Length: 336
Picture 1 (cartoon, rainbow, N blue to C red):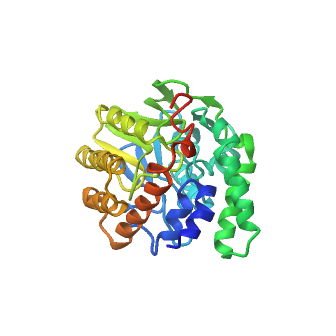
Picture 2 (tube, helix red, strand yellow):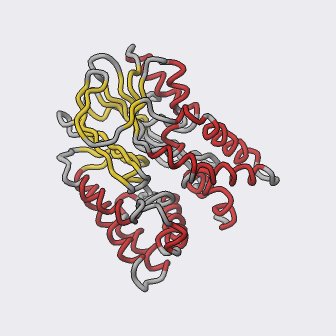
């Protein structure tokens, strides 16, 4: 992939268009119906996608409650959000709660569409969108406008216009109820353990754990084919993964990629730790990229996945993990 494409587009979409631009073919999807795949009884996955030439959608996890549905993340494209609505119609249950794991647009852009269809629903999220709107997303908006001012691929321009419209929706991206601390909440009649990690992938990352089934929806605290470091504090993220391993989950759903077992997650965590160790060492970028491909090999089962993982890790080594400290000031918090 051309480096100039990364430089022009990555700021506007917090890693997402980097993935879309690099991928030569769609990633394998989790088998199932067009409206979702049952993980266990009462919990359904609507897989995100990496369609060629388009920005990705994050995974959506839907929990059935006694009174309605709880939706974890709403995707980016209307087609993904429509699958959520189709599932609700199929189940003949209203969507009463949306939980955003974080503010990245591939996890929140469907909020407005769901609100329009179910005006009674409430959105739960951390307060991190406040800083993002005045910081990262404001800069992304400017980068997007500059990109549109140049001649470019019409499909990519359409993707950027859609993201700009989402950013310009302003308050529609904010939660109705702010998650300020971890704890148990009952949403739509379903008790869920709500976790909150500070300054990991973003300023506030929310995860959900359903103890009766052992399903953990981790958001972008776990992503494949590589970690997405655009707005992340790598050291705090590393600590957050250590805390996730303490959760008594059986199955973990990442923000991007297929569900994991506990053993899979242990492999992912070791690969993540090794990548940060390599980044802090005198080893070359190429050696660190080779290390990620080796350590994360169980998840990189196709040539496109391996190629994309290598491109991403190489990019993040230069842009984040080995960049000047001042460039990433604030990502680890006011004292980070």
